[in-house]
Image (cartoon, rainbow, N blue to C red; front, side, top):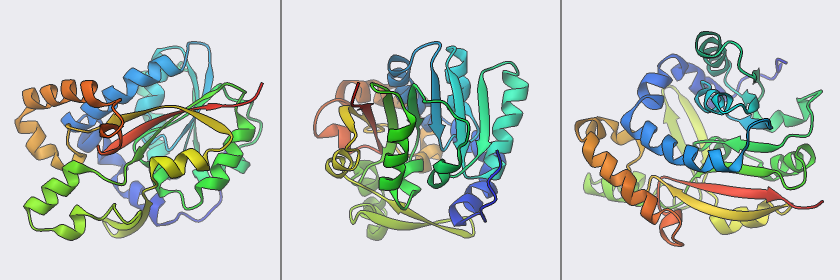
Length: 270
């Protein structure tokens, strides 16, 4: 499947960084620490033999992880260059893996033809924060998953203590509190991305057809990815921060003040 929609600013922004994305984030100290925390939850949410839908798959790192655990993945992304990178990685790393990478923005889910009812849905690292009409996506997902199916969704939080601390320390108060209003624009190379920062309470209401089973903080003490140069100099300290995160991540206040929150929803009905 290839969507014919004209790429928007967000798609073009990620096109522009696709070739360097794995070096700058996937294999980074911060990226690895935060992704490992997500994977610890993902491997308990999904099981071998299942077929799941991944939204905003990027270069395929998560889909390849699921394939190694014998989970089939239909993986979608709005960025043509990200999808091309993901397909190259599949050919090199796991040519026989049960993964299908497709160019399709999350907003265009109705165009996903001939797809079965999925056993679950996964979305990592803020892709859903860039969707302008999340309510329409929730409605579409409700029609595409089996009763009892888990949705594991990692979104940026509205309040990130690391971000507030770091940018306040450097006198950039606009960036320090940019998430707090619920939406912001970000410059990404030559492109502008519009980002939404919904609260946990609003997401619980928005995902009405799904029951919220858990919320886990990701990147509470582990810093955001823009602090990678600092993190590279202190890998052992990042390891310590990761262990602290594991102790704090399920506590009511801490789970919503990190860089991300990982929501585990479950489709209601029988």
